[in-house]
Structures are given as C-alpha cells and as structure tokens.
Length: 149
Image (tube, rainbow, N blue to C red; front, side, top):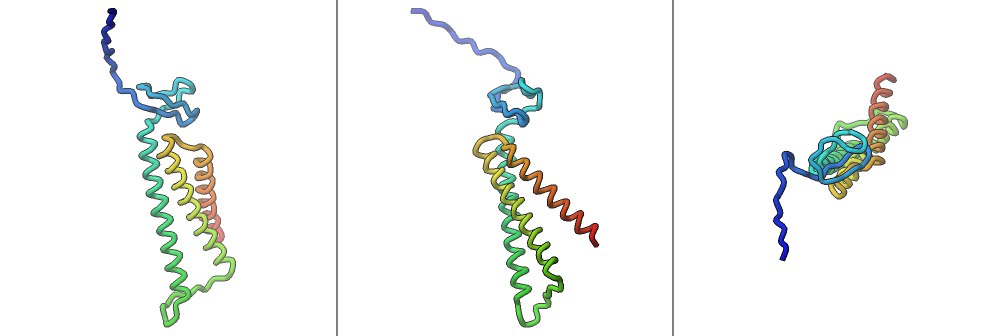
C-alpha cells in the first residue's frame, strides 16, 4: 500500500474569486492584477455588494419618483384652494415629463444592473454603457435648461 502524505503549502495571500472589469477574466486567485490585460481585479463579493447598493438605490429612486408624480398630480388636480397651480405651457409640461421619465429609466437601469451583478458576480458592459448614456443625457438636459433661461 502506497500512501502519499499531503503537505499543505503556505500561501501568503488568500485566494478569492476575482473578476477583471476590462476583459472579463474570472478565477480564484490571490493576484490583484489581471494576467491577461493587467487591469486591477475586483473581488466578486465586492461586485455583488455594489449590486445590492444599486438595487436599493434604484428601488428607492423609483419609489420616490412615483410618490412625487402622484403628489404633483393630486396637487394640480385638487380643488378647494390647495394653492398649487401650473402656469407653464405644453413645452414645459413635456420637459417635466421627459425629466421624470429619464429619472425613472435611470432607476430601472440601476436595478437591472444591480441584479445582474448580484446574480452573476460581474458587470454587464451593455448595462454600464446604457447607464452612462442616460447620465450624460440627464446632465445635458439640466445644462441645456440652465443655459436657456
């Protein structure tokens, strides 16, 4: 009977599942840089934690926008001297609806991106690009409004 004894090797760093945000490389490793592209690796646990934050943030923002929309609708349609009046025209109302819809889209993309990160442990590049485009559109809209006045 030939028995081999197993002698564990000492490792200086703990191996954890890590992901490369640039090339998508994912492995259990103690390295901090991707062996394929050299970018800093992120732990899957950290990515999932950020995903939880995104889901909470997106849900909260969506809930707030729903409440704000209902509050504005009730204030504008209330009778009996509520004091709320809307003096804008159709263009102003269109702009308000556009900004509200944009914020709702941002919150939905945040929730979808967060769920993706929680389930798969990495970021989806298409969702990140979509969120970036919506953010630029939101900031551009704000800048255009401020320049127009």
